[in-house]
Length: 200
Image 1 (cartoon, rainbow, N blue to C red):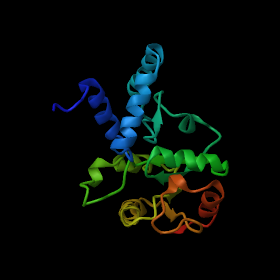
Image 2: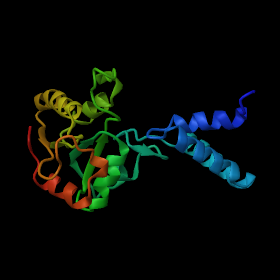
Image 3: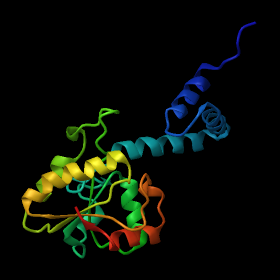
Image 4: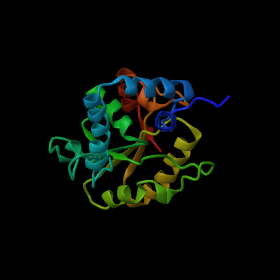
């Protein structure tokens, strides 16, 4: 007996399976949900993906996601431009912003060093960070990377590059456990970790 399959539906399931944390069953459930949408809703859904993909890019200063040349945080003249908080990905910026306690700037690396997965320094936005530090304005860089082996190694690597430039390098401290993923930390924990940062 021939196996039942609908090629376009199978391709849709395969695309959902490519998303992080989505297994075959969840992908199939999402695909069937999309199939239950009205055509106008499906077009809106697909359009939102394409629109985001076309219009969103990296801020030319901090490498965070934005739909303009410069992100709103870098544009904000009330921000303390003498302090840069280095984070792993854009979701970490959102997590810190929710605390409403940090009024400086960010730099998004879009990853951490990982020899196992092939992430080398040239694949991260390290050059852009170093370029920012070549002005007299920046006095402190806060390492706010995940508390993993890779995050720790990246912090140390960056510290060795930054210190010769005469810029103070600190690390978030109290409240973030080793192995933690920052984007899942609550606002109070993130505030405490910023308040208790120490020099590297």
